[in-house]
Length: 79
Image (cartoon, one colour):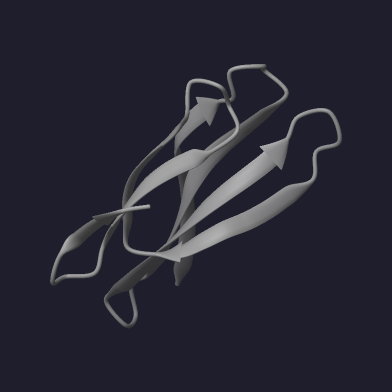
C-alpha cells in the first residue's frame, strides 16, 4: 500500500503560485519519501523541485527564492 499525503502549503508573496510537501508512505517497506512541489496557480502546472528528507520550506520575502531544510540523517542543511 502506497499512500501520498500533501502538507505544509505556502503561498508565494504575489499569490500566483504555491509550494507544498508530498509524502509518499510505503508501509510494505516501512519507508517514506518527500517531494517539494511547486504549483503555478494560474496554469495548474506542477513541478517537483526537490526529492529527499525535506523537513521545512518557505518563500523568500520577495518570492524569487525558496528556502528548504534537508535532513540527510547526518546533518541538517539549509538550501
